[in-house]
Length: 272
Image 1 (cartoon, rainbow, N blue to C red):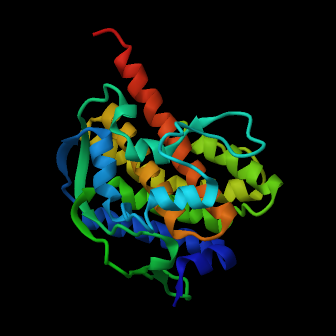
Image 2 (cartoon, rainbow, N blue to C red):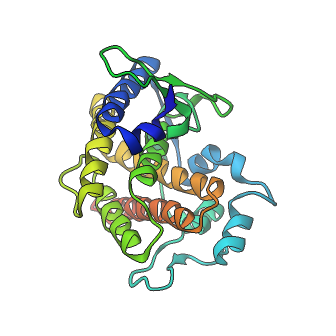
């Protein structure tokens, strides 16, 4: 057996079939999620409470790695034309969320660290070859159901889309911007890596879309899925040590934060 990360790099077809099995496992694990309500800042704080350390938490790592501080409301790396909302600031400052109301979210069993190295897959292909999920140290019995999907999505992207040159980083930016436009996926721009990303992320997004439809909470649950992506990006920003991968994680969080804030802004300015 090998981690799913190994299959993604060496056997894309088997990796795809294993991802299908993972989605079935998540569905069977959570047949009846519970509906809860929170404002987005409180929910984000709950998800990332293990990242509040004064020495190894989001704030000190952001300042040390990129000079980012909670007072910096915008994020822009060298060479970037467009500034994005700074996820570090929105994680630490409730005032930046404005009039964001309570939003509905699905509470369920959540692994809490659902990346490709925690999915162990059999090397032999075949029907019924289920992967094994390991490391439940961050398990939550009533966590945000979308967190595991968002964590796995980012982990897949890091494995198949390298970010260690300016050109590859531009490809990452282009693909990730499209991924943060809507939950259902259409075509992704770019070459083979983008095509592989779509094929692997697509079934995850289909399951998320089905959950949204099952609850008939399209607006709230779509926004909350983006919030789960913010949490995933910030979490991996702390875990990864490679500079380019850390940038990718922060941009993953920033693009989804931008989508979430756009939804909040639209709602606040819509006719009552």
